[in-house]
Length: 197
Image (cartoon, rainbow, N blue to C red; front, side, top):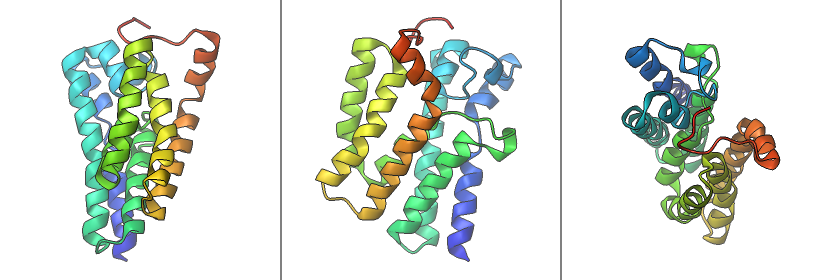
């Protein structure tokens, strides 16, 4: 029972859309109707500015951390439960029950989840991600590379199999949520960081 409860709590926590709340509080808007239409830190940067975007990024990442820690606490340290709770937190961010199942793309929450269960893999993948963003100004490209590299680093670092499978699900989630961005990247139409939509 605690196993199920922990997953539900992680999902409900992940469903809190800080980007949506920031839009409502600061400008009285539904941020999903502006910019890229995404309820995440990048679109928050585009619409609301640096301060709100950084705040949203941190809070979204903390949702992921909290989701895993809830699984660790209620699951008695079972790595599988931690992984499932992390996945539930990301799912909540992507498909939030409070906001009509229209959420973000889950990268910040993914960072929070993965840094809690595989910190060094996140560091190595994060370096590549940051370099890609700095060199190209495409946040989506950095995000895609980050999630693609996580399973590889976890595999080579011989992490727990549960965490490896979690990273594969994270990879699928991220690439599915970024499918529109992938098309735009291929066509050279993707928005760069700092540019207006």
